Amino acid sequence: MNSAWKDRWNERYSSEEFAYGEKPNNFLKEQLDQLPVGSILFPAEGEGRNAVYAAQLGWQVAAFDISIEGQKKAFQLAEKNNVKIEYEVGELETLNYKPDQFDAIALIYAHFPANIKSLYHKTLDTYLKKGGVIIFEAFSKRHLDYVAKNEKVGGPRDIASLFSIDEIKSDFPNYDFDQLVEMEIELNEGTYHNGIGSVIRFVARKR
Image (cartoon, rainbow, N blue to C red; front, side):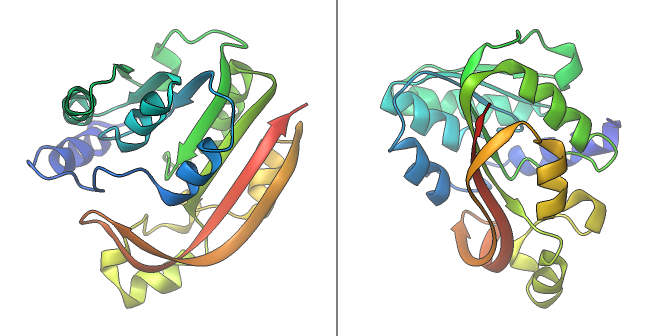
């Protein structure tokens, strides 16, 4: 992952305001509220809004991102809400997560660079226990049409970094999907997710 990618996110997270707000993603909240608490991993967690919410529910939370500024904001938010989270900075292959370590993994707008996103998905799969759950929301390939009309909705501008249902099925072949949909939603998350966009959402359990 090149330094320009890291610099971009450090710059975004270096301001006093939270780029995507302090509240959890709506879909993630809906799903976590239904699950028994356990251990959960948040890849590409940014400023920590989702990890902190999970910790408030009693989850044992681990998170990572390439941005040191994101980590700083996440610890700040955790302290504000009187919870503790584990949060590492680095690329996935440099971190020391273990096979079958987690009961759940939350991939919320975890748009990894196109050349590694499938590899990351398959690596993350090894860290999830059998019977564990993945919660996923991210922009679909159709989202390019939406961001062309409204830049404030955010998201990647290259189609290879966006997702299709076929890609998801290919990356997670050993899962039973409780839901897997492509849909239009309205986002209101901080400064950088505002407006109508096209997303893929899924909840799936590892066989």
